[in-house]
Image 1 (cartoon, rainbow, N blue to C red):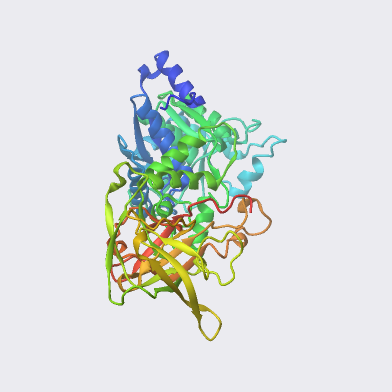
Image 2: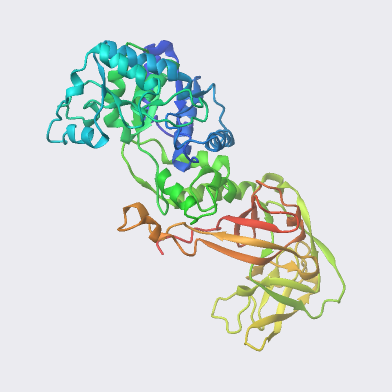
Length: 552
């Protein structure tokens, strides 16, 4: 842990437990995702917290899949979760599944029935909801609540044996129908689901509810600090009740504020909607807040860990600015990304006094911010260059330091040139800019004595490679789409993806490496897309060089 910051409240709890010898001074945490979708940046916060605590205090972290709902689970999700955790830089102690404990959980349920603390209920879901009462009115017991232990044991065994259809019966804990905490009003423990499970196959047709499986799985594994998000605060008394009544290992639950990020949604259900309805290109679309989407967009594990460290661990919900996440990746890529030249909206610049057919090779640094610059690469130069359309103006305003007739600029790593004229097509669009060059003004060897205020990037026409460039922006045009009226999908940003099919890139980018960040000089940070091929290069913009969303 860095010296600069004070302990967060969970670290204070852990240090207190270690100092008093609770759990023998041991720290064992777990990260318990449901395999019903891909992980998002909010899960990254939980991963960093659980694994980070264990690393900090010499403990371990289990990766435990909460696979108690076979209808929504898939091996694809399991594999993606494991890949994400590893990519973030963490190693789990044991890979476990709630389904590993199905037999043990069943025995726990039988034990509670024998103690008169659980019963089989034949009511429908609607009847149970009505019988539970309201936050201001107590619930009412039904005839099934008074079944004998023997009858409950028989019915529960028959439920397991597959005698009843889905929804015909449930097993409920017998706690307190007048409790001010609705979660203690005889909560469901088991429901019947004749569904194939991705690990246990068709062995089971009854499945434990999350609130029953979660705490018991923690206890089975001897988890010392079970860390959840704030919405689980009202569930904690139930977590403790099950552990107490079963007299099993006393795992403890602690809650922290979940991560809310503006201009996106964090609900797995809503993210699944975006995928299934085709609003995005899969779970790893670079506009998605999923870890796989951020990875495809060019975010680094270090930048996400830094982000999670900066936002800290709080007890109160708050909205985090997307700008902070972008700031973290900018800082990381500034130190590691190689500088390259790419022209996204090209017009041709012709150096009229430069010999036709001549090529020179100049040298550009890979990263001036890195110690030693991380080496150099060769830049071929010729009479005809591609430059950005925005770098020339027919009628420039004052303080326009790029190309206009009579203006001089430095071509990055090359010569100073002076604009002498331009040509237009029939529609009045500028197609060529004509310049002359100052021969003794070569970068690093300039004896011209001329000072220019502008520097522009370029790519040599005969040497340029072509690439598709994808410019990504915020997925939503409002800060909190979940809080707006109507369907959250109505607020999708129509400009969240702009595709430039024919950008010109310097030849070195033809050998770009997947997973590496590149700074396209003056344009932003980019990375190779997973669908890129040597025949069709595709680059995704990770982030702009500056925050373009500062209070627009």
